[in-house]
Amino acid sequence: MSSAVSWFVTIATLVSLLVFFLILQLNKSVSRPGQTTGHDYDGIQEYDNPLPAWWYWGFMFTIVFGIGYLIYYPGLGNYKGVSGWTQVGQLEADQKEADDKYGPIFAQYRSVPVEELATNPAALKMGHRMFINNCSVCHGATGEGSFGFPNLTDSEWLWGSEGATIETTIIGGRKAAMPAWEGVLNDSQITEVTEYVLSMSARPDVDQALADKGQQHFMTFCAACHGPEGKGQTMFGAPDLTNDIWLYGNSRSRIEYAIKKGRNGEMPAFANKLGEDKVHILAAYVKSLSQ
Ligand code: HEC
Ligand code: HEC
Image (tube, rainbow, N blue to C red; front, side, top):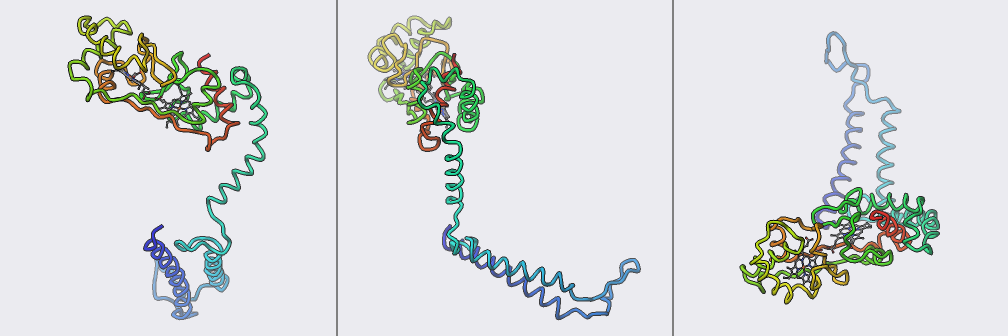
């Protein structure tokens, strides 16, 4: 935290401890043992006695304890405390303990190929849990995907369906590079190539004359990644454009938008977060989803 905030926290904490202490002293000095306060609640009167000793000392103890705690642990702004304890250190120690304990359970599957592991119920159960924790935010609880996040249960793969390839995807992440074409193609050319893309998946509402013109643009600008027949190429993460599976929606306007503005879907890398043993099991789980 900034030093201004640090000072604010430090001073506010110490001042409130001091105020607690002073209130306790005040209670002791202004009370009049044996006399009433003069308040009268439905005929019930209140003695103006000081706090009972056990209460007073109990309070004092919490103040002393608080000061000791604030010296030992970090609590006063940026002051680190004499113990050297940190939240990150604690987390790392806990993680190491968990890794030592559970690591071997994950490691035992490392030598089994992904394809074979994808039929192992025990491994799939672990994979399912890890998927829910790490992947479902984007890919959905059952891997069904959503706008911009690929469905992992279908037959189309942007980057490839081999077990080893799926593992590479999860370990290193992926970044799709579909360029924006609005600076290269003018509006009518974009309309034409959009029509051609629609015609590739045999849509009934296609204007064939426009599509025929669009084919040239496709061959010039798009075939390098999407392939001359639009079947896609996993080397570039370029999707098959000839089927009914669309990452960014199937309407004419969505497809035109993708062509105009480009698309750059990004799959985060999990090597550091999960480690390769867990990723291996996850790859098997993902593989099992489409089988
Ligand atoms: C922050 C969102 C996000 C999270 C979390 C995420 N992914 Fe992804 N994932 C994506 C996106 C976006 C893509 C598509 C990248 C692209 O457009 O090429 C993708 C692609 C993939 C692919 C490639 C699919 C194909 O068709 O080739 C696999 C496999 C995959 N993710 C598995 C996982 C697994 C397993 C996890 C959990 C460990 C995970 N993802 C977590 C966003 C995410
Ligand atoms: C450099 C390689 C490359 C070129 C060239 C390229 N694309 Fe793409 N295209 C991609 C990639 C990669 C994706 C996937 C984007 C993502 O996953 O975020 C994609 C996605 C798309 C999509 C969206 C598909 C969906 O499922 O929603 C359309 C439509 C598309 N491209 C059409 C075209 C057209 C038309 C051209 C030529 C004008 C073209 N692309 C040129 C790589 C390319």
